Length: 296
Image 1 (cartoon, one colour):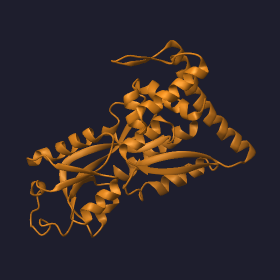
Image 2: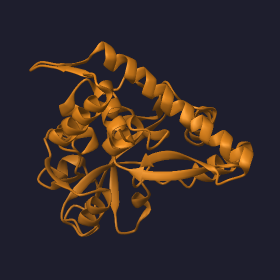
Image 3: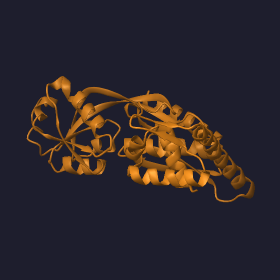
Image 4: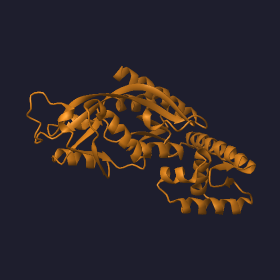
């Protein structure tokens, strides 16, 4: 049995769905099923009951779920204590943020205050898309994240605390035909292509973009590209437009222009509700405090 099998088991046990776990982890369902089968063979018990309608944990599966959840928590705590006692390499706590966000007003204070409290623990920064942030949280590859609250509606196992809001902006190139108009309106871009970063949750993104554009009387034509950087590159080169948060750094670039939309979304600090150590709890409260003080 290995860590990969344990991570797959914990993810399926949390979701109670092989299909949903496959989408979250970007791994094929047969690959996950194979690792679970190997795990069941080694343990000598069935972990899940599967039928056409749902997946549930067996009694043995429930026991192992509780065991591995405690195991991960105890392992993190033990690693931290051992490193502190022997002055070995410091423990690393991973904190995740949305890719493209301007964190210059947040990170310096967070890093300094965390170091003052835990000098033997290092913070590592991971920036990625909303779906990847959630997946990394659920698999314990990051411990705390600052992300969009609307991406966490289906995850009751995650602690979520709203700390700020973000205004939605429509960004476009100065070379766009509407750039020189005196009163640019979002409806002027109804015939433009709207770029968005590709996600497994494409249907959710499509629904959100339609909601943002609804007050202006149109449904956007959406083209998905690889990531947020690809979105910005396409817009800068006047290949279309995009809707972003007012937290992104790119809105300060002279190669882009933007107009505000009516839509406002919530930003929240999130982590697992259970099995977290002292450093993770402190980082959660610290991030909440700093973000609120900078964006109140």
